[in-house]
Amino acid sequence: MKKVDPIPKVLCADDNEGHRRLVQIILDRMGWRHRMASNGLEAVEMAGQESFDLILLDLRMPQMDGFQTARKLRQGGITVPTLALTALDYPGLASDCQAAGYDGWLVKPITPRSLEQAMESCLAAESSR
Image (cartoon, one colour):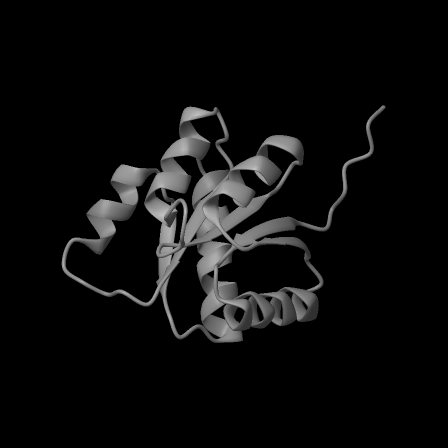
């Protein structure tokens, strides 16, 4: 029988090392396992090789932005709850994120509390489906 790990595992992709480090510190304090990617291509590759409970994607990354990355993950059959992290807050952000396959979004700057709440909300929405 396969052992189920009760500690959630998160994939975070952000091209900004400082943002990745902040998310890593927050996840460490929450006791969550994590993997970090510096762009969308790395995130797609990692998500195809490992199982994750949640994916966090920056919307503005080189090579493949967060919208392209989310679409590529969904097209590849990856249905893990996905949360957009963005410094952009504009009219239509919600509909753009939903169209790309995101389950939620969080506008930067993030705080430990805002990230934790957004992640929990995203996971709760997934579990109620």
